[in-house]
Structures are given as C-alpha cells and as structure tokens.
Length: 276
Image 1: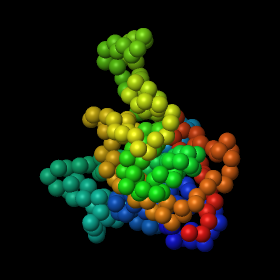
Image 2 (image 1 turned 135 degrees about the horizontal axis):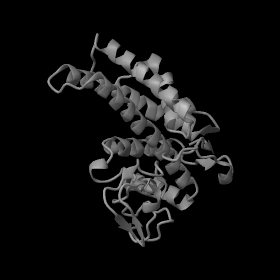
Image 3 (image 1 turned 60 degrees about the horizontal axis):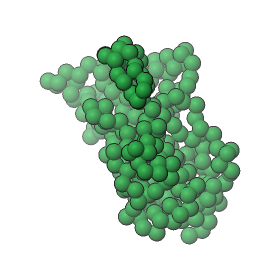
C-alpha cells in the first residue's frame, strides 16, 4: 500500500492507506474472492452508516446473497482461510447452519474492517494535532503498542455499544433506569472519565491506557482485538517511518466525520508529505 504512495506530495490516509490495508487483511483472512470484494465493501458501508431502513435492508439482503454464493463456491474447493474453516465446521460435528456462517462472516467483516480503518484515521489525526506526541512515537517506535491503546481511548472507533436491555432497575450516578429499558453505553464518554484516566482530554502516548472500553468488556469483549492491535501497531510504524514529515493538508475544522450513531470515523484525512 505504501509503495503506491511513493513520490506523491499528498494523499488521503483513509482512502489511500487505511481502507486498502485493512480491507486486504480482512478479505485475505476470511478468504473473500477478489471479484466479490467491491460489493462486499459497498454493502457494509451502508450498514455502518445512518442509512434509512430500506437502504439498510437492501444492503443486508445483498450481503446475505453474496456470502451465500461465496460459501457455495468454496465448498467445491476449500482453502486455508477462515471461511473455509467455518464451512468445515458446518459440514462436521459442530453443525453450523449456512445462515450462521453467513451472519458470522458479515459480522466479522463489519467488526474487523470499519473499526480498524477508524483506528488508523482517528489515531493519525490525533498525532497530527499533537506534534509533541507525533515526535515522541516517531523518535521511539517502542512506544507504539501503548500509543495504540491511547488512540483507542482518546478517540475510539465506536461511539456507543450495541444496545442492552435492563432486566432490573439500575442506578447510574443520580439516575435510576427502570427495568425493561433499552440502554446504549457511551464508550467514548467512558474512555474520557476523569475518575479513571487523569487529564483525559489530553493525548499522552506514554499513558497506561489499559482498561479502556474501545473493545467492549467482559463477555462482550471484541474477539478481533488482538488483530486490530497488531494492525494498528504495524500500520503506524510503517506510516511514520515512510512519511516522517506528515502534516494535515486541510484545516481540522474542514474534516468531516461519517454520519453514524454507532461508529466514529472520518470520511477522509488529507495529508501532505515530504521526501525522506
């Protein structure tokens, strides 16, 4: 991906770097054929934005059909990918149904693609807006594992959790939520809780940010967290080594965020570069 940007005076971190990188990783992991990847991405883009109900339903139906066709084709020639492993489980003693395979595949792609793209975009923006922190990780790449945790805490990939429903009255602060109510948990708000993280509105790549809720908690903790962390660390290491003088190409106020209640990510992130 970085090779395609060689010699350019600027590029879009989202469209030119994060999307192709993360897309390649998750498509290769799942085993999605090249010919299906554009349709796969288009469908999930609708599902992760604030689309109307009809558009979301059409996208969902299209993805279901697409994955069903991929599963049918793969049965004729299984590979070493995750989708092949799920098919083997369906045809073996574990007995996954085709509907379960399809739903799980779409869930893995949505969870493994959009949020990681947001991590790379949001984290890069955070560094560009905090030059001292950018200099710190550029000069000492050993800080990157902790820096990725701080990016997730400081400006995470998801605004809220998926909905929960109270089974009994729950008191939060001075508010009691009755039983039987639907509740959304503000992940980005929790990650800026001053009772948990001192000076929470400050980006600090040396902070011990473990305990953030960007990947959820408990039985709802993201199963793809190790992959996202690895992608983040490798991507930032390569990006900063290849382009050590990145700067924003627009005023921060001109940046647009994707319209999504659930996910939190930029539409684009134009940057300028200079020769190494």
